[in-house]
Amino acid sequence: MTQRIRALARSGSLVVLAAAVLAFTAGAQVESRLVGTADGSRFLLVPFSSTPIIHWVSMTPAGELVDPPEFPGLSFAVARSTLSGTDTIGTKNWHEEQKVQLQLDAAMREVVAGVGKGVLEPELVRRVEQLKGRLDRLRDPTAWQRAMRAAPSLDFRIRELPDAVVVGVTTTRAGFATVARLLMDRRENAILRDLQAKYNEVMQERAARIATDDERVRSEIVDLAFFGGGARLKAVNPIANEDVARDLYRKMFAPTVGYHVITGGFDLDEMQRFLQNQFNITSNLAWRFPERDLRRQSSERMAVLSDGKRRGIAVGLQSATPLGQTELMILAEWFAGGPTSFLAKWFAAAGIPGVECRATTPFPAGANPGLVLVEAWTSADPRLATTGDLVEPLRQALARASTRVRYAELEGARQRAIYARDLDRADPMRLAYWLAIECGVIGRNPVEALDLAKPSMDYKHYTAMAQQLFADGYRTIVVMEAQQ
Image (cartoon, rainbow, N blue to C red; front, side, top):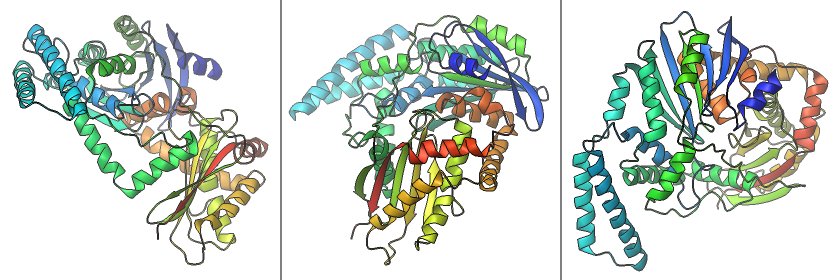
């Protein structure tokens, strides 16, 4: 059943699926269900009979995987704009608003052309401001969110992640149908009001993050480790193209790429019937975003960049074939998860104490279930001539890791991972967010995400995984040198 659910859940041609799975949540066994609807939507249903409210978390892909190359961050601006209403909610006169918007679009194209030539006519600037003022008088950009809160929604929040935008709504059983209608309206009929202003916000936030050493260096590490360099810190087109944004909206909100998790007090059969009746038609074509263009190396690859403050080393590991995500998470935690990890102890034994080790998987999120980013940071220790002195111990640790897997150490890593998951599963709303990220963003199998039973702790199994990831996998070593 596990393989069947995984295959169907990732299929863009999914029509109707109702597969029962078991969740062990907060110590109680709960029947859950993965439901597919005729429009291609996917819903993971986890009922809690003890609560009278319902939590609905909806995931939409965003970030570098979906952004047009010339408009980094546009997907987040689009997602924010969809909260400004539709052609029926948030407008005082839709036909007049549409006409003024077309005039503003034409004027903005003239602005782009003028900026390219180094000439910007004052009259054009005044006309743009006048058109914006007319639009403001025709719009009510907070109407959709007010309608959502009046549904009623007891809690309504938006979270932006590196690879997705997650909208969470808590409502009553009586308000659930209204929430469903509003989410459907946003998916099908959103008007991207104030797109340029939203895009400006995203660009300002992006610039502020990149200005910090940690964000810049981490971005470059990921670029070098997984993409071959030169792909992540690009020039930004400052003017959001409305046509490009509309096309991106249709792709981002295609039912086949979103993911919904519903938890709380409801009957599984009734909820399935409601969703299959409600989510059966879409104007968005079936769409699957392409996978990231990962640069696989058949042998080790080296790269060097300047950090400015600290010395460190990172390695991007890619297994030749996908690995089980829960077990991979445990293996990564064992290898580089903090001061007691295998890698930290290896550095200490090599005469390099105090190395800060961490492992992230899957990384980048949603790209491939066999990706691990390992980082090892150290201060400018005078005993190290260069950060390159970390390279050989790292190579040795990777070579020996596949033969040094120990049950007791893996069990400790497993307990830490499960403890972190238990914290999220104790509350229905937190569980909904957690599942939306695990299944919708990372792409984890819902059976694996829900199941709290012990993953296999077979020694030979983990040794084989370690061999595949650490010894046989593709890798790029990135050396970070402190500037003098």
